Image (cartoon, rainbow, N blue to C red):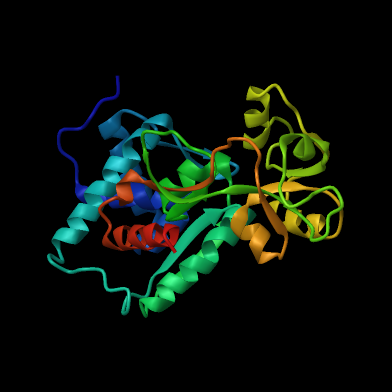
Length: 298
């Protein structure tokens, strides 16, 4: 069982947070304006207090141990509450704040959310900046916990006790085909859908998507002739061929494709926003969550 210290210098937790974020004692010292020996001494005191190495030196840098991962959320929450207590009543003013929010998202998610996000921020006259980085599902927890990103946007539900989430968008999935497609009439029946040749995008190398799972429940299977990992290539491929693709309606409309209702029940395309629970009380984080929520209704 992990030993929890009864008393500890709060400044040591700032060192812990800096090492966690930077992955280096040297860079942590630079951020905190401390010498490396001072950082090493602080880490030694933390290790003694928790009876755990907390960080292990590897070729990739200082890697947190399971104990460090289990306490980082509480430490960052405590530091945030301490910082907030020093500026009581100070609200986050997006018109004055010089802050950059970093999000990670896949290409399709970014294409769906970015236009709405830009409109919402511009309408508020905000001075904040937004940076969207590639989504790395295997690194989402660490990137959120370390503050490398503020939010992860994904279409796949993630489950971790350190993450909080909200649904940002829900959108109808449609069958997209080019204008004048010879195999499609005014309406699309299930036999017609199954007779089409399909292109499918997935970040996974194998396994069914939501559309294929819905068809399986009907005992049916579509013919996928092209599978690739680039979601935003689908509208271009569909526009220049007789292939069909199941994509969110907004993407089909944006590329002037025919957007036909699917002839079977399927769940909507969803975008979830994830943030680390240590950032839940951060006023800027709270404001940005409100902006994301408005994007869903835009």
